[in-house]
Length: 288
Ligand code: NDP
Image (cartoon, rainbow, N blue to C red; front, side, top):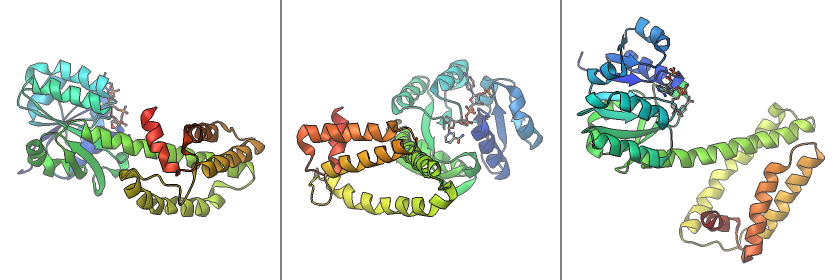
């Protein structure tokens, strides 16, 4: 077998999908999980279950971590401290950029490498090259293990700073959560008025499809600090979001979400940006 053997620690839905993908691609895989029974199916498929986290790390140079968060990461790392020197920890657990930097420092002090990964797909997307994971950390470590990591998803290397992969991940998640909640809120108003989620779907889709055009128009202006109100004005946005709030409330739907937006718009107007674009909120958010 010419393919590098790998270790996967953390067998939640994500770690299991990762270990399966490595096995399917012909890699020898050593696994460990705090709750050993979660390895049963993988062992049946040919994975080696290590008797301890330490044994799992000792087994291979490349160690993939898929743990709930970095509290779990540090719990595992501290238990393997004696054997980490020379290892490359591809940490695909989610947390903040600062925690990723902390883990990278901790490992560097012990002679080990850290690659941060921010996985952008659910477990069902693991094993597809169209899926994408942000990576950051020392470029030579990334290049050395790129082929193995690409068994899991496509790899988007963002740079040397170990925080970058989590930063990109969290920025994307900011957009994801707020967009999904916007979708659910709009659907609640639709359903409260007898329009089913499915009936609403084509309208939702066409509005969602218009967003990239707006973003492509505004991005260079935001980058240039140009928030001119020649296309849209914050006063108009404030009136608009209040209409949404009133429509929600008249439908028996909680108006708290549009009220948060209205509050942000109002602060902008009060700060003198009423005649500027909605994009002036970027500066307002940064000051907050
Ligand atoms: P889970 O929380 O279901 O699984 C996490 C694993 O962490 C389990 O194996 C669990 O062990 C282990 N664990 C938790 N705490 C500790 C600890 N203190 N010591 C040792 N092991 C611990 O997460 P997922 O599998 O869903 O996801 C893994 C990572 O991938 C997360 O960081 C998540 O944010 C990220 N991710 C997940 C996505 C998804 O859709 N699931 C999408 C994108 C990223 P045990 O079995 O013993 O409880």
